Length: 443
Image 1 (cartoon, one colour):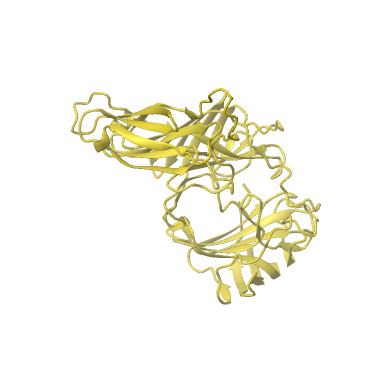
Image 2: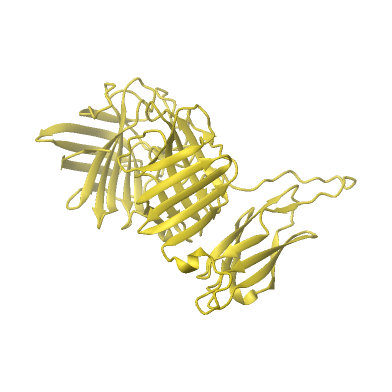
């Protein structure tokens, strides 16, 4: 997915208008998706998903532990339609707890079964008890976008999250959630529904059909704040898609994660979300102010461990010319750390092979010879040119700034090297500069 730095899409829950007609027949309001849940012996937080039909103003969903209180911790409701129940580690025999979920005068009981711990007699254990190198995860939500051939001909692109909590109306993740983000390519069908088939990990990111992009795909574990969020990239992945089912197996830091999802496979159509190339305001009239944490001028340097790469984006802005993203990243111990520059440029040619030497003026008007100014789109995604300051490990930002004015020059420095000179400003008038020479890798 182009320039993905924040999460995307819709909140889970089906809500209908309440009915005030007292003469109408009684309506069942509360529908719980699953009533029996399994928990790992090592302890975990399980998720209960429910729907409310014709909710009544002022009434709330309540929970009550009926049995097994000693095995449970906090019970929270981070969003409408979601209940999170903390299950403590089990050192004895298989055990269970019962939690009642009630709404007005309706009650549904949830049974939580926990596998035998190390101190038990072995009865009722699951695979996780015998294999420390395996994680099983049942995804409740599928959220994402269908991009068609927007990023290159020959394959349709599908970018989506498999998670336990989904995303809110602003396209943001909830706290304390687990999100597997998959950037997949499929044969061209023109359909917004993820096609059936087997998808394999593509370490070279060719964009070929039935592949999973290795650089974008990741596991995101949200905490109570941005600073607590963890991002882990995949070492390997295989995904099998069949009718209303996804079976995903990924390897992260030597551990195998087996992810399953059952439900609809249709994604939101984003084939027309192209910024209205050539329009005087591709941001759709959004407020572009105050998207910066800088308090003074900032010079960006890339010394020691770093990586600079270029990505061909096709004719993303629909100008008739090629669009490239130049990413300049400081790294520490193999992870993104510190300053990163995202430079979004439109060339004066239609080359797909990195013919982007030239000078670019920063502008919100998409045209040849333009470095697109930074803004956030309708899906809360940073688009255009930005400066980011990452915490070590690239899991969260310490700071950021949209680039809204200035000039960028990329030139041939000889011997396979290129020179990048940036003289720009953020939306608060702070100078953002960079003068770097080195190899720009093709991604």
